[in-house]
Length: 241
Ligand code: URA
Image (cartoon, rainbow, N blue to C red; front, side, top):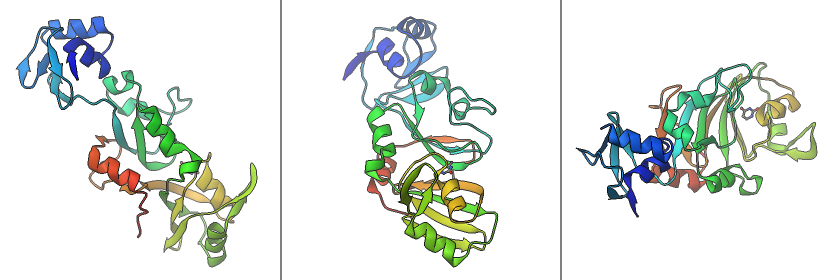
């Protein structure tokens, strides 16, 4: 798709058309390694690399990100008591409307997906799609066999008479479980553990679909999800430990 530089920058979150025009005219924008001061210069958008104030970007029709969520951050645009996960992202991603794909509690850590692709959000949050999510759960009390059996058979939560079962539940230590769930209800894992007679002390999301939070992604940092990672996500392969 051929597109004027001003429009391209707007689509990537660099502000209004007037803002983007001013940005280009001020000499802040490079395209494919060359300074470009003409906001109406036309480029093939697909695969286009550009810089804004020295920061490198690649044109992306949609933005798909993975964030290693730290504890103490809320997954809300208007957080009440803690900073927002959105404060960990650069402005252009916020301006283009990137949103969390489901939520992690303020005290939960690990893999959080974000995107500005509404269909993607639907695909990964719809209960019908049953995308597996794997959590490492640290519990207050020692986990016993009846608790594991209850989690696998299904426990009843206070807001729904239908039991909710873990797809998989592996003991990693006396107070540590690897739990796979396919729903995304509010406080789901905490409420499942409480219903099984235990209590969550710490919750860390390891994977979604077949995509595992990379060990190289530091706490509080984010990365682009490119085609290979998106394929893994869609693979619905549950990680085994
Ligand atoms: N289940 C919870 O209870 N909390 C989370 O953050 C995610 C799943």
